[in-house]
Length: 359
Image (tube, rainbow, N blue to C red):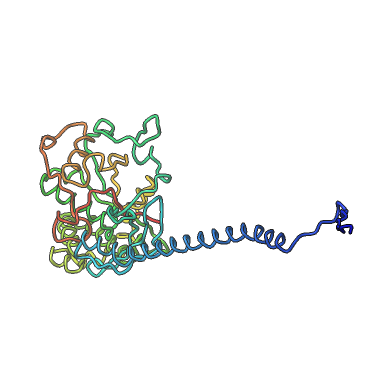
């Protein structure tokens, strides 16, 4: 018997028709989904990282505001109360913030800085871009960097004049007044060269100042004592710098309070004296307390050693065409205390070139 066999005829499928098996379809779906899953996963991970970083940064800044900065300030001056730390933000790899302090019952605000690890604290700062180096710091090097002034750079006169421009409630203005008082105490002849003038303005017939009306009125009081009761200026200021108690100090130091009241209320006296100070400050574009004007030249005390008696003595001698005998005498090289203080020097002394400036 003949064996039957079956043969399969080839089936021709058109080139433009293609059949996928179920397995092929599933495989392709998996391949198309996999990259999308990877992308989504990476986005989720990145989002979590960003959220985590932001939370850690927020936590760190909150800790800086509520714990680290108040602790630093307390170490700098145990007698100061930190009322608040405001406007904390990152500036040039540092934290910048506004300190609101209670200093002997007087609320004052200062812009300060700290490194992010809290290891370095800066009581003040200067915006380099805003410096007029030629006018404020003297000459500059060929590279444009500020040149540190030397004795040879100072203008010389027969009767040198070293004037500190301050405001009465600025911690660093108080520091400058204190070091002037110290220098005069160590060498009486310096009283002939060391002067104090004030920064402010007169608006609508009223004196104004950078820290408000209370400071403005104290500026006016000190100006009147300086002008009309000159011998009592340093005794009064020496007392005021301790705790800021103007009325008590006026009585304690023998100020003629009736004469003082007449001066501060009479625009032809008090305001007229003040306007002369303010006009000079405006002429030299002085807006920071303290600023030294030496023989019509703005000079940094830190080029000569800081806010010390010896630095002021050196500035006086360097700006004199005839050297006095005391120029060879070495005075104290310890920085004066900052802010209101019963001590002339102490833990609250500051070597940093800090000041109070108009905003």
